[in-house]
Length: 572
Image (tube, rainbow, N blue to C red):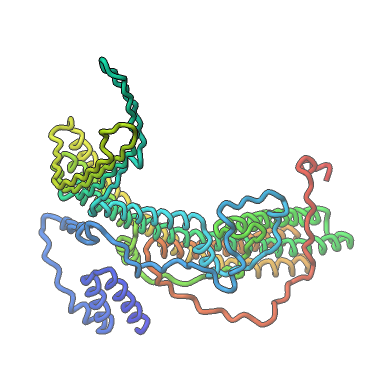
C-alpha cells in the first residue's frame, strides 16, 4: 500500500509539472479507489450507457489542444527544466583539460599513450560538458545569435554620421592678364579648405524594424534551444559511450575466464590422453575450444581499445591519455513513469517541438518584414554643414578667408509604390515556409512518440532479458560443473564439456549485453522525455577480499603473426 501511494504521489508531481490537472485528478481517484477496496471501486464506477441494438459504439477521438495554445506562439527557454552544463573541472579532473583548439601533434611521441585514467560515469559527464568542442561551438552560435539580436535592436536608435570631404584640401591657381597699353599682370592664389558635415537621422516609421527584431529574438531563443538539445544529446552520447566501454571490459573479462577454463580443460585432456583414457579427438576438441575462446578474447580486447579511444574523442582528452571505466557494469535503476506519462512529458519538455514553433514565428516575422518594404517610411533628420577656406597669394584684391555654416532640420518620406511584386512574393514564400514548419511539427511529434515507445519497449525487453540471462548463467555454470564431474568419472566425453563451456560463455555475453542495453535505454528515456525520475538500485555489498578464481593459470598473450603467415594453416 505504501508503494502504491508513493508511486501515485510521484505521478502527481510529474503531471503537475506538465500542467495536466485532469490527469492529476485521475491519479487521486485511482489512489482513493485503491484505498477503499475493489468493491467500493466498483460501486463508485458509473454505469455504462445503454448500447444501441444496431451495433457496437463507434469510437470518436477527442479534439487535441493546439500546440500554440499550450506552449505559446513564441516559446522561451525555461532554465529550470535542464541542469546547466559544468563550466570547470574539479580537483580530481583538473589535470585533464582539453587541448588547444588549434593544437596539432607532429611527432609520434606526442600521441603515445602514457596514462590509463579510470573514470566514473559522473566524471565522464563533467568532462564532456567542459571539454567537448562541439558543445563549445554551439555555445558560440548562441553568442552569435545574441549579437545579431543586439544589432537588430539598434534600429530603434538614431544614427549620427560625421563626414569630412576636405580635411584639409590644398588648392593653387595662377592667373595671367594681358591688357592693351599696360603691362601684363600675373596673380596667383593658394588656399586651404576644410569642410565637414554632421547628420543625425531617426526612423520614425519603419515597417520592417519590428518584424526584423522579432525574427532576431526568435532566432536567439532558437539558438538557446539548440544548445539545450546539443547538451542533452551530448550527455546521452557520453552515457552510451561509457556503457559500451563497460560492455567491452566485461567482454575481456569473459574472454579471459573462458581462455582459463579452456587451458585447464586442455591440460586435463592431454594428461588423460597420456594416461591412455582419452582419445586424440578429445584433445583436438579441447584445442578447438581454446582457439574459439582466444578469438573471443582477441575481439574483446580490440573492442575495448576502440571504445576507449571513442570515449577519449568525445571527452577531448589530452593526446597521451586514454580513459578506462572505473565502475563495473550494473543496473542503474528503474524507470518510474508509465508509457503514457513518458509520452506526454516528452511532448512537454522536448525542445525540438519548441524550435519548430519558433521556426513558424520566424517565418511569419520575415514575411511581415518583406511586406514592410512597400510601405511608407518616415525619417526625421538634422544636419550641420561647415566649410572654411583660407586664401593667400599675390592677388591684392583677394579675400583672405571665408567660412560657411549651414544647419537644417526636416523629414524624409519614402514609399515604394511598385516593385514588380517582389515584396509580396517574398512574403508568400515565408508564409509557405511557416506552413512547412507546421507540417514538420507534426512529423517531429510523431517521431518523438515513436522514440519514447521504442525506448520504453526496449527497456522492458532488456529488463526481462536480465532475469532470463541471469538464470541462464547460473544454470550453464552448474551444467559445466556437472559435465566436468561426469568427465572425471568417465561417463561422458570431452564434447559435452566443450559444449557446456561454450554455452556458459555465450550466456555470460548475453547477460552483459542485457545490462548494457538496459542502461542505454534508460539513458535514452531520460533524454527523450526530459525527465530524471530514475530510482537507483540499492548499493551492493561487496566482500573485502577479491574472490578466488577457479584456477590460477595465467592467460599468456598470443604473439601477433603477419597476416600472410597467419592465413596459411600449414605454416602454424
